[in-house]
Every structure is written in C-alpha cells, then in structure tokens.
Amino acid sequence: MTFLRLHAVALMPLLMAIACESEETVPPTGPGSGGTTSTTTTASAGGDGGSGGSPMEPRACFRTCMVAADCPKPMANPPFDGDNWTCDAGLCRWLGCLGDRECAFFNGVCRDGFVSEPGVSTCTEGCQDVSECAEMLASVDADNWSCTDGGCKYEGCLSNAECVTDFGDGAQCIDRGMGYPTCAQPCSRSADCVSMGATPVQDADNWLCNDGLCVYGGCVSDDECTMAEGVPAVCAVP
Image (tube, rainbow, N blue to C red):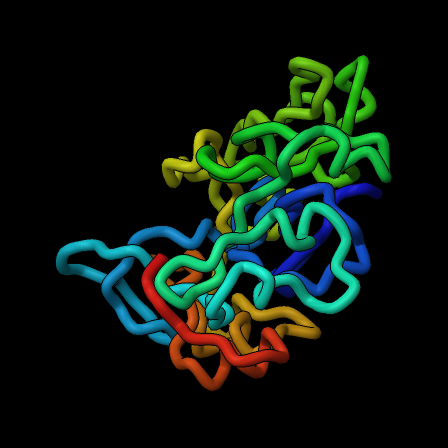
C-alpha cells in the first residue's frame, strides 16, 4: 500500500503517495476519503445540520515562520524538505513536490491533480498499467483510476453503491469541485466522523454532520494547530 492514509476518518483517505513516516499535516481530501473534502462552509466545526449562509473556505493549520528554512521539520525528506516550502506573510505554505525525483523513493511520480486538488503537485504511484494503481476498497479499485502520463490518476468514485460498500448505508459519491468525486461518510452527529487516532485538528470539533454526511470544517484554534504540528502554528484561512 503506497498511499498515505491521513486524518483518522473511517478507512482513512488516500491523499498522496508520500513517505509513510512523514508527520506532515494536510487537509483530509483525496481518493477514498471517508469524509467529504474540506469544502466550503459557514457553520462552526463540531456542529450538526445544514450550514446555510454564504460559503467560505474552512480554516487550516499553518506553521509560523520568518524565513522558508523555518518550515521543514527536522530531518525532513522530499517532498517536505527545505525547497518544498515558502514563508508567506509569516505562514509556512507547502509548494508540493518539485519533480519526479522527489517521489522516486517508492517509484512514484510528481503530478498536479492526480491524487489531490489541482494547483499543487503531489506524489502518486508510477504505473505502466492501471492494475498497479488499484487499492482494496470499492471506491479506489481498478475502475476508479487511470494510468496517465506514467502515473496513477484518481478518477473518483463511480456511484453511491461503491461508497456504501466502503463506508456503510447513507454514504454518497459527491462532486465537491476537487476535480473528481469522492465518498462522503454517513453520520448522525459530528462525532461519527472521527475515527481512532484522530489528531487535535481531526476530532469531533473539526467536523460537521450536514444532511447526514460528514464535512470537514477545518481547524478551530491556534492551540489545536500547535498541538497537531508540534511547533508554533496558527489556524487561518488558506
């Protein structure tokens, strides 16, 4: 299994194929996501019911910095070492992988939008045939991928039935504007969206249960970001 399962959602999302020992914190988006993507919302995280109002992007954790060299964690490897970060107005922003060489440790390739939202390149598994991309779950097996330009590209869940197989009755396959649809986990309250081992920015107060589906609401405080990152960090709008 080459995809890093992140954010303690049931059957963990497959966001990027990156080093399994990495401790980087990233939003719960991507293939196989048990919750919906970190999509627009105005409701406070940890709530239940509809959000309503005008949408705004959920807040995310950012380490604080004076220069880009402040951003990598000690002994970080590509794609999370010094040249993968910028310090923008005092906040660390990840630039993504910078080329196939940074993903070569697992025979991966660096591609934009293949296993994450477009705009930042991430590592994905290299392939010659789509069978090399398949995972065990129904929403991430062979028919959910293409082998494109030498890399595994997630095409999204294909039906609600796939999501129900993976996440139970009520799960839905939803297009949240990521470039591919993903599974949304069913819920009756925000606590249903949290799975074992959740970090401080992935627990019940960071989730919404909207219309019976989990929606990631973002971080809620600087303190929980600092706890999650292990270094000074703030909760801010991306």
